[in-house]
Image 1 (spheres, helix red, strand yellow):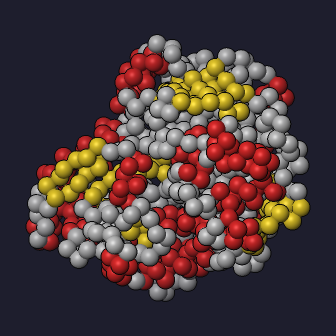
Image 2: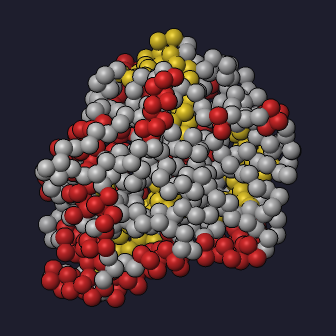
Image 3: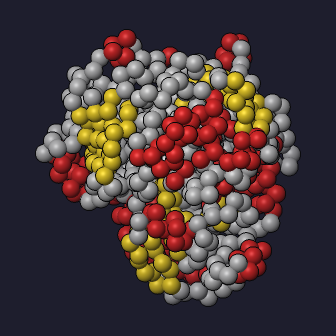
Amino acid sequence: MVKPTIVFALAGALLLAIGIACGGASETPAAPAAPASQPSSEQQQTQQGQQQAPAAAEPTASEPPTAIPTVVATATPSPTNTPTAAQETTALGGRLRIATIPPVQQLTGSWLGTTTSANTQVRPFTDPLVHTDRFDGSLVPGLATSWEANEDGTQWTFQLRDDVNFHGDWGAFTAHDVLVSAGFIVREDAIATDTGLFRGLFGDNEEELATNIVALDDNTIQFNLKTPNSLMDFFAGAQQGNLFVYSKAQYEAEGIEQLQLKPAGVGPWVFEERTVDVNILYSRNADHYRRSPFFDEMEYVLIPEETTRLAQLQTGQVQIGEISRELHTDAQGSGLEVLQSELPSIQVAFIIGGVYNPEEAGPCLAEGFENCFYQADEPHLDPKVREAINRSINREEINRELFGGIGRQHTVWGYHPALPGYSPRWTEEFDDKYGFDPELAAQLLEESGHKGYKLNLLLTELPGVPEMIPMGEAAFTYLTQIGIDVETEAIKWSDYRAKYYRPGKTHGTLAATRGTYRPADITLRFYNRSGNAGFWRTSVDPMTDVLYDTATQSVDPEVKAQALRGFRLFVRDGYGSIAPNYKATGRSPCQNGTTRTARSTTATASTFCAV
């Protein structure tokens, strides 16, 4: 039986609005780990029970808030992730070929693109400090064996492995490589998802960052944060996606450009070569510290056309392919089989653009930009318009027709029910606040005075969700039927990122995006009132600034949960996004009976088929 070990790990920003997500066998996975010192054996047993505790209900005036348990990262990997001797030594040979949608940015430097781009292309050849357990979503050791934070969350210390070597002749992995790799994220040319985050936590440039991230010795790295944060272990992890380890020795010897041409990593695969818009080729690392791949080579074949990806699967030119669920019947008729992932993986969103902070108008205009940030005549600033958009969307039909009915209702954008502080009331009220009602939607649009306004519906897609464009096409029909003048624009995600949402020019737009299951407060920097520049805005209420600071900086889990509840209520009740509905828990990747255990060490990809 063929058993490839590593397929694809997709991660990105968790932003959901019509929350259709792909994959995941468990409906209530454990929440990602929160910070704390490494626990004793007795503490670990207690915390394992806490991870499964039900989410706290939203407090009322007569009901004190429920304490939220702190979940501590474990010091050793889950037994289920421990490879057998056969897995460590057996190689099958040959090349594993994977047909996928081209990534947003084609790169080898993780600082030059989104977390998604970094995970799909960089993670095969190099590793992060922290991994995500593929079975329960908890944070587990990667290059770091353990970590701890001080009481106020301003200092994090990671102990590192001492038995890892870089590919080629670039020597042993040490804490000094972590420092250099973190510095890449704040470079002047960096456009990583985490660039703003790292500049805020550690400094605006590599020199300042080096004063706050310190290699105490070869096997100890210390992060001294400028503001408290309870999620540094998550930021250092695979699911976040930008802090991957590169060789300090290679950087100093060859420079940044040569490092990108042939990067030396510490991952299970060795980077060999790539041809833009064509392919990326890796070879097997036979001496990986965690486990070595079964195949001699792995190749990502970049194919934009879905029918071409399916045809290559059917003819055996590729062994794994990314196709939408509407083609799963054709795939299965050709002897392909759907493979189920262990965790919720991909969640999809429609972002309502143009909801900017009124205080951002001045600075934007002062810098010489035109038509950016707050504009008083923006239709999407009217809650009635935003509610009308929400009411127009037939989520059940999308789930049934595009996702094969495998979805599960997911009621608050970016807040999985398994996460601390989730309120069951949000689920109970969903239909009343967001339910499909095109007649009410048309009435609300009429009352707003914006009937017939022009909306630019951006049709784009990302790896992991080939259904994004069909979802946009469905939205075109729904929105047109209630009286919105919808125009569509086919656009690459990288162009949408550069042209619209990074410079603050999302006015009059609606666009889909997607991300992964992760802590609720991670998502706040993507939709808020006055958070990091270059992210979406979905609220104009100044109270969200207070809640944003509390939720992102507090290390007290109860305080954090209360702020998260409040923040979500402001965004939800103001219709700041198209409210989420479905989160898939059924089958997604496809493969036949000869290739039944294709997995990675984190959540598997969502819509792949293999022969």
